[in-house]
Amino acid sequence: MIKLYDHAVSGNCYKVRLALSQLGVAYERINVDIFKGEQNERWFAALNPNKKVPVLIDGDFTMWESNGILLYIGKKFAPNNLYSEDPKDFGAVTQWLFFGKTTIDPALARARFITRFVLKEIQKEKELEALREAGKSALQILNDHLKKHNFLAGSYSIADIGCYAYVHTAEEGEVSLSPFPAVLSWCDRIRSQPRYISMED
Amino acid sequence: MIKLYDHAVSGNCYKVRLALSQLGVAYERINVDIFKGEQNERWFAALNPNKKVPVLIDGDFTMWESNGILLYIGKKFAPNNLYSEDPKDFGAVTQWLFFGKTTIDPALARARFITRFVLKEIQKEKELEALREAGKSALQILNDHLKKHNFLAGSYSIADIGCYAYVHTAEEGEVSLSPFPAVLSWCDRIRSQPRYISMED
Image (cartoon, rainbow over all chains, first blue to last red):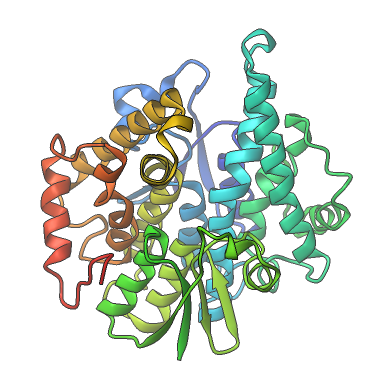
């Protein structure tokens, strides 16, 4: 059975849990206590030298980088469902998955992390403000696209799952989603997909 | 013919040129004058709302995000050459391409950009130092892997091309590659591949 080294509040882990759930793939969930620094221990660094969750183990194959894992899961378990081998559809999926990692997550995931988990006294207000502004720019790009499209890359796919994880938690980083109604509707469409699970499930 | 909206000093554009060259795919190169801010003009934002080069146009298909473009090129032009449809090989390629975008490029590309293109008087020394340290950590992970493997994901692939672009220019950001001999040997192996082109070609 697939093993997922995981943490409950990590959006990067949640992406993978959501994709596995929607595809009906069974897996074992192994908690890594990131607040205690367990990801820095030698046994974990042997799984992922970059010392981050999630890590996925599928038999003799180990991999890390959440959005890469989504592509692996897509290819292995989701032909014509959440993932397509058609070059253009595939290209669109990879475009949005990389947009997630270059533009959405560095802003929104980081703003959420600092807001939720760093003591107010040592938060750097200027840094947080810059992250929130970058998050709004990313949301504007998504909103403009989602005004004209139901999903990011044609039909519902791992691209939506990859971007949704830190978009739907934007307000935990004090970035309001109200100015982005097309993004809010898209979040609703994702939540209505079969076998959807929330981050807390 | 494929069109590539491009800039000569962008490592992200160079990745795409290198992959197209190595696969022998003809393309038209269109310069976007990023130092004049041409990427912010309305015509370019209509191609990429994130206002960055490269953008690839293949017939009626337009896409952006350099490492996503590498996967598209791989799927379309490189079956069993620089790219594999085997799930594990594919997963390994995506892992390293995302590592490039989450960990290598934000450090090394940014350090290079500031060092080369931002006036010394307004460079923030503390920020630069942090970027260089992050770059060294990324290089250490690559070096440890490349001590045991000739290439990042099995045989030579788009994963190597995607990571090479900002690794081989690390010293332009004043991050020395000398402490990372396995990375240097890997760079040499890449340069010896058929139809290799340099960033200046």
